[in-house]
Length: 207
Image (cartoon, rainbow, N blue to C red; front, top):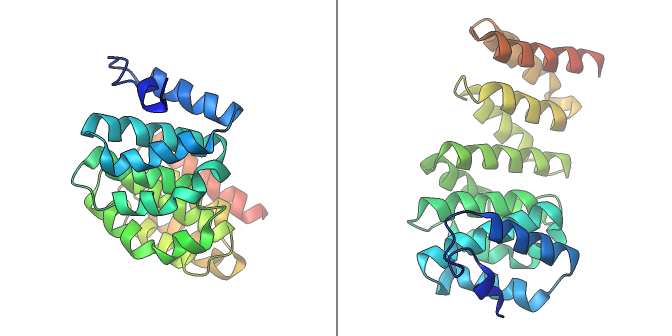
């Protein structure tokens, strides 16, 4: 059975479980040819196949980023797709490899952030996670970009983005982050969200 025959759409399934199971199987028993076939399907397959393939690839990337990292260019190309599912799927895949392909991902930051700005909340979330991973990998452009986006983040996303920033912040940017969190804290009404930001501030004060 071809790897494409194991995708949810090929099995006439409307759920993602077959795609997740395929990712788990590839992580447990790597098959470079099968992974390459999935990457090729991002441009050659039907919309349904593309949607399934990118799901498998980013699920695999979460488990074994080194296995999907060789296909970074396929993910970058998908950022220009008109299919929103493909765009946030590509951003999800890129996020998984940012730590192991930091240089390549950083070189495409302009395209990544542009795609996120045009995309869904998930797309924006993945771009912020990618910036945090790049900052942790020592990419100098990542933290300033992350903080710029944090400053303009919607209230619902702000606590999560603050947590990402705190996990990646460098000494040179810590004061700016603390000041930003202090300023926004006064504007947060939801108790749970406020508590998350307060927790971040306490962590930064200790560190």
